[in-house]
Image 1: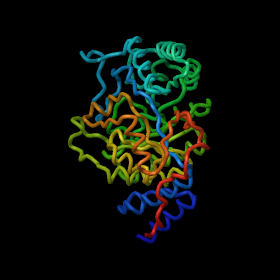
Image 2: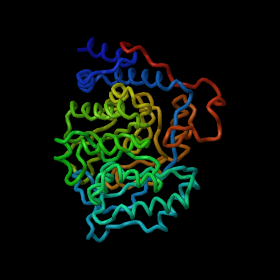
Image 3: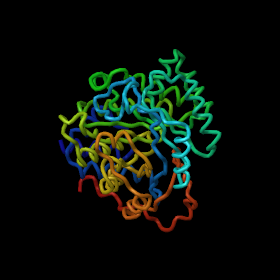
Image 4: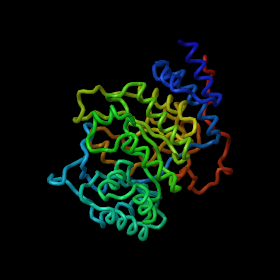
Length: 376
């Protein structure tokens, strides 16, 4: 078994595409150090630059009203609940102004699948924010939300996405992916996009010229093989469209909603992220998930396939509702990168550097420790 794993890892490091069977064998491997060395070697091949990146944005949950029921979600409310809300426009303005003041260039807007807000409401929202904050990218509406807009308004998916794009939608977050296997989705959620529907939203958005991220929330009822099926679906769509800028994975936070499930810790998170880096040979960037794992593991993730520390995350509500969320200051994020041996650089959602120094002026070939031999 060890010789087989070494062969698979060597293939990945050399840039040879892994098969589904290869991926499943890696998911069965418990040698965390071996997986990490290989994932880091792939990252160094894809990202030999002397820096690692982060961005500054804010996660604005514009509503918590949702027609779906997800077993793992402690955030959503029904329309008649006393604490159900839709944020007033002035509060949105204030949140975006605070983000800009902290150096942010983007807001991530996601909400529930509201049963009565029509497409025109979202178009008006985007136009209003685009007019008031023309330099801020609107990274908004997860694929399940978009699918909900399509069904609620009885409009073709392309029409919905084109209208939102024309109104100011800048990029598409990969939320609501969980595990892209219908067995899992049907057991955990109701009234929410299934795997093909999530993929189709991303496909149409990419074909309209849009970019976005892909995600995976794992550590509940899925099998290791289903994690690979999820990664394979992302890789296949990326072959077709090239529209994914990054992949982000995190462990489910059981909290009080799924307390019967054991909480997966750093080992499982790092192992799965490393396999994702090895398998997703066509997705350029992997983000560390320090929001769920904490600063130290978020930093270690830079040696397990990640080349990006993700967002400052000025505000986070959904994970926090489950009882687990970590907070870092901008200085702590930058220090996490520099302590690991790289120059911290701010980027936008499209992974363009936006801080005040061109890459050519970054001092020194600070690239982090060189990867060890896979069989060390």
